[in-house]
Image 1 (cartoon, helix red, strand yellow):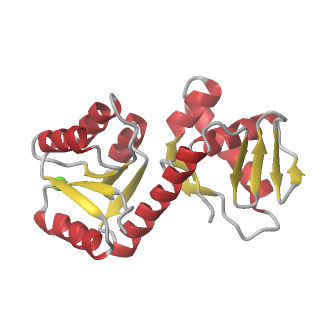
Image 2: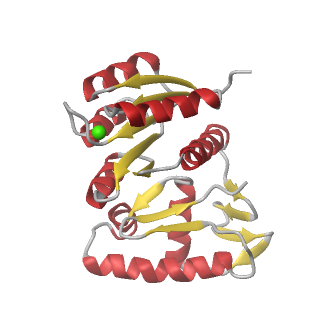
Length: 231
Ligand code: CA
């Protein structure tokens, strides 16, 4: 069986690259490697990988520039690999179109979990595009009716909470930055809006997660939020 996706690994550090490729190999993934930005763009355009793992600090090009280039022709998931000290870089990468990030140093288990989560999201977006109902675990959204349900019971949401929920659902599995969310919801990003966003998100989470163990919304401190794809 080889329906495992093809992963493009972009990393100039040999030891990190080897850790990633050995992990991929032992878990039956197919992969390609690139050690710099130019090679990454060539591999991405000629082999059309399913997922890219992208180190931001490359010798010839900033990783964000690579994301922007790839996004001109492809929506393939891009998972950024970045050092902890680079929160602003992560935000810039997410706003440029990255889907997720892994912080260095990372564990093999975490890398595999992110890949599985991305594959689940891929299967959702490939099958559920024309659907007017969104389903994630026991959460469902009926877009035509403008209602959200948990286990079939309507959740009473304010218009703002519903808007936020729909935005997160449309990007399930993807980390959305504060700037992206406030830009979509309010059309601009003032400091004030980020503060309001926290409040709306807190009330939305409470309604989604009260009386249930399931976590639907993940907070990325200083960065943004993500709706998790529930099994
Ligand atoms: Ca590097």
